[in-house]
Amino acid sequence: MAESWSFLDTFESNFRPLVVIELAKGTKKETIEWFTKRIVDKKANGGAQLLVKPLVTEKGEENIYLVGASHLRLLLGAETVGLVKECNDNSMRTFTYSSRKTFRDFADDNHNFLTMAECQYIIKHELENLRAKDEKMIPGYPQAKLYPGKSIVRRLLTSGILVQIFPLHDREELKKLRHSWYGRVKVGYQPLDEIRCYFGETIALYFGFLEYFTFALIPMAVIGIPYYVFAWEDYDKYVMFATFNLLWSTVILEVWKRICAIMTYRWGTLLMKRQFEEPRPGFHGVLGINPVTGREEPVYSSIKRQIRIYLVSLPFVCLCLYFSLYVMMIYFELEQWALDYHEENESNFSSLMLFVPSIIYAVVIEIMNRIYRYAAEFLTSWENHRLESSYQNHLILKVLVFNFLNCFASLFYIAFVLFDMKLLRQSLATLLITSQILNQFAESLLPYWLQKRHKKRMKKRMSSLKTDTDLTLVEQINLEKEMGTYFGTFDDYLELFLQFGYVSLFSCVYPLAAVFAVLNNITEIYSDALKMCRVYKRPFAEPTANIGVWQLAFETMSVISVVTNCILIGMSPQVNALFPDSKMDLILTVALVELTYFHQSNICFHGNMI
Image 1 (tube, one colour):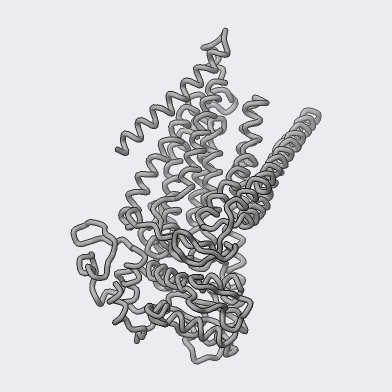
Image 2: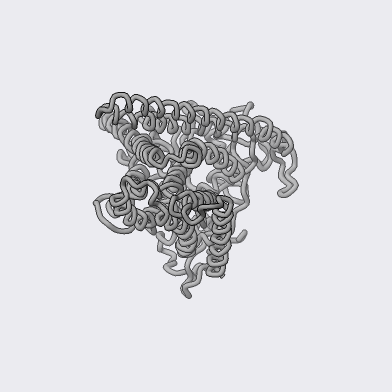
């Protein structure tokens, strides 16, 4: 490997821009010279050995730089990051430059052997691994301290010198993808392989899961429509649907594991070794020696972190949960007021007023969820987690606990305290439909409208621009750098998680829940695709083998769903009639059925996996 770097030249006659670096306006010249030199410098000298070209703006400023790499450099980078590729014998192996001829479709002149997303991922990896050597500070900025082994890019970002790094869109490839993905209304599968090649495995897996979950909802919707029609006013005839519900919620997640493994094996990420995880950009502490790597880097006491988690974050989360329950009780007071008003007036208007408390409560839930999200992000950052994975796990746990209680506590209260199946149906329908409408507006329609307005303004500016530089490239970069940043699949998975809860927990009393979920997800596929291609900057590809901690979250919801549906079955008049004398026998029977179901399902699925 070391010998390969020595003959690698940084010059490339056909420069292909892949990544854009935007520095803060007014960045000192000595800082720019030092940073660009480190990017193009040889690996032996601590550089990234990449290609850099400045983009001169209309004012003559040079704060935007285009980064690319030679074909040979990208191949060597593919070996560094451990990309897995298909060989001529149909096996999947980690790519190495020395054995490059054994890989399918490889040729020295085939620049499409690596996808554009893989090339951009390699460049991002190399830029993030630019490390300080003997520098004590960033040249030109004495306050921005450096120490040996510190990531230069991360330090530039935290000090505000580096504004952003983002991968460029390939306009021709994006045009083809948009046409096959959402350019025409059709019934069929999404082009997941093309999505993966363009956006990477993390984005492709989200859309794969969204598509799979939508198809998995169809049996529930098909059964739910006649069930709803023929048992409209009989709220107690839900035993058969609840039984099917608990089976469905468990089976679909196990089937997804297999589908996910098949896809990621084909893409090469199932066998990809995990990279050593670097400290988060926001992580801070006293300078010390890492006992694992031996490098000098910030060290923060785990005891201090635990104190922050258990003495500050945990009480705050509990306080928010208490406030959520308090709001829920106000909602029930409004429900009682609406019911009393309807009984006094008995009019069409009073009938409509029965739905007003649920609609107001659904809107309040969405507002509280979003406000809490910002608070959870602040708290999790303040806890000062060293690794990004630890940060994400703590953030997801905080958000899921609050969202679960905030969204479902009222439904549990109605079902198991008030025993009011009619109100449960009304509340579930209102919460589900209102949340779907608000999410579609906030996540897709509003960003798309704002982006359209911004694009029109930018085109007017660019039409009057006089420059010798390629106008289309300048226009593209100026448009893309002002686009919103896609912060990952967190919100998308969270929305599906809550939807899965609405369907799996109580849809037996409102069978149309799955129907509305299917309709929402179909529009979600198209709106999310539009959002990825037109609204947000292109995100860097992130190799992954599964949907991560969200698999555990959905499985936990599935367990809660099984318990809930078993209790609802036990509460039904049909089952109660079988135990007229002893309620304790009924409770023990329901508990025994739950335990037996969990035991048999584990044996079945683990046996099949073996």
